[in-house]
Each structure stands twice: as structure tokens, then as C-alpha cells.
Length: 389
Image 1 (tube, rainbow, N blue to C red):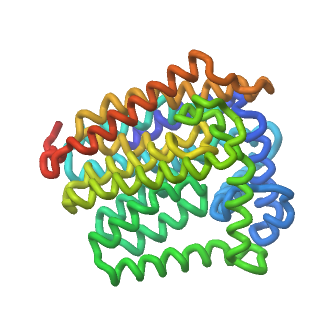
Image 2: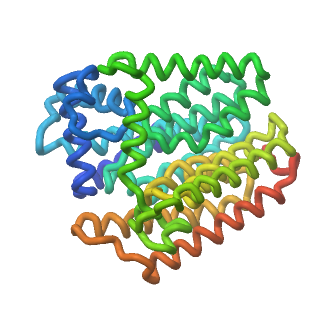
Image 3: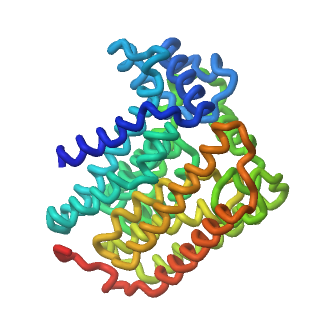
């Protein structure tokens, strides 16, 4: 495992020199510099604009200070620092995948699944080429789900709070985490877990300067969401068929209704077939929520499919029919990111409804339909196959 993590790191490190998305890299470098130079408390006062929630600032602050101590916080190395941060969290996710599977499967099978994720080209591209931070909240989502599966409800909600306070997209998994906490631990633990969630949120925002904790957080989240009033922000989802960056008007309500119905359907199926030991099926439901979140609401970016790949990696040793999904979505996510990055870095509008985007959107839509059919056809007891391959 140490060898796997080392080689996976080197594979990413060799791509750090690529420019990434200039706008994002510049923003992250600025945020890291401000957090390091001024600390947590005045960060949102000093920064004229930052749509990342408070725990992200902890990440900027911690890694920025480490880089500063090592003399790496300068113009020549800042891009390496920016890409190093999500890489650390991504390698931690590789470890989570391995150790979760190793409790039930052989070393060979567990190691293989971890390897498939560690060298997934779409995952590597996200941080090592683009320079994005999706690996950070993905780590907390995977850890939160594992803790919920292992009947550690308070810890699960604490970690889930960190995920939401890192990136708001993590909210897609909230219904499933709440469902698991209640079903596996009862109403009393559910309320204590809610309390743990609230206390974690308060503890994280406490060092910052604010007059009202509710408006402090709502302003950050709503400004982030309100800045992208588009059908699709370059995402190969159903709204991409209308076009990228088209005003969504009231369509955003329809998008959330679609996702709400989809979420209710997934939880209904899970509730009807719920078996606490059938962890692969539960993880597959987590994947479905993350995949549905990418495909159905408006204002979705090209990278929001990222955390779904990690959930799939946890299922492929158990559910063979998820393996083609893993391959297909790896391809469409990689294409989506590379396609958008090329045009963005060349200051061009990402083309609407050409053969590339329409083909990829069609593939993603058919994959969602296949995954939904699979959700219904997986048997309650036979979806698990705890053998050494």
C-alpha cells in the first residue's frame, strides 16, 4: 500500500507543472496567501470575494503555513502547493477504499480496487492538471459514509459537517447519511447526531469574524449558488442539451424537483430492501445520489461528478454490473473536464450542443438509466458477494 500511494503521488506530481485552469489557480493562490498571512478571523473581511465555505479556509491556512515554513510560498512554487493539497486528500481516499474493503475481502481484491481509483485518469486530471479541490470534500464524504455504515453516528455527522463546510455540493449525500443514522442507531442517536452536526458547524465558524452565524454561512453559500444562474456550467448533464451557460430562470426549481424525486426514489428502494450488512448496496445508493446530483439540477459544473467515482470504486469488487459504469463515467468525466479546460484556458466560450457534448450527454443519460434499472434489479441479499474475487 505504501508503494501504491508513493507511485500514485509521483504520477500526480509529474503533472503538477502543467498550467491548470489559470483563473482557479490564481484564486486558490490568493486565498492561500491571505489565509496564511492574516489568519482565519479576518479572511472573509479581507477577501473581496470567496465562495468557498469556512473549512476550506482551514485547509488553505494549514497547508499555506506549512508551505511558508518550507519556503515554498512563492510565485515559482505556488502552483505546486495548490495541487499538492487535494492530492494529499485524494491519496487519503485511496487508503479509505483499501481499508474499507480489506475488512471483507482479500488483500489482492482490496488492493486492486484501490489501484483502479488511485490511477483513475479523470481523478488525476481533476487535481494534478486542472488544480481543483474536489478531492478534499470527497475524502470527507467517503469517510462519513463509512462511519455511518459502521454505526458511529455522531462521528459520521461531524465528518459530514466538515464535508459540507468544505464544498456545498456535499449536501447531495445528506439524505442518505440521515437515513443511515436513523435506521442503524434509532431516534435518540439521530437527535444526538444532529446536535453533533450543529456543534461542529459552530466550532468551525467560531474563529471567523461574523455578527450572525446564520447570515455568515448563508451569504457564502447563496453567493456561490447565485453566481452561476445557468442551465449547465459546462457539465455534460441533461441541461447541457439546452446549452451551456444559458440563463436557467425558473428551470432551477424544476431541476431541484427532479433531484428531490430521484432522491426519494433511491431512499424508497433502499428502505424497502434495507439490510444493515448489505453495505455494497448502500454505497451504490450513495453513488446514485451523487450521480443524480450531477445529472438533474441546473447550475452544475463539469467536475461535480467527481465524488461519484470514489463511491463506485467501493462497489466494483461486490457488484460486477457497476464495473462498466465505472469505466464509462471515468471516460465522460475526463472528457468533460478536458473539454471545458481547453476552451476556458483559451478564453473561449465552451461550445454548445456540438457532437462532442451531445454524444457525452447521451452516454451519461443512458448510464443514469442503466444505473436506475440496476438499483431496482439488485437483490436484497444477493447484491453482496463477500468472497476473494
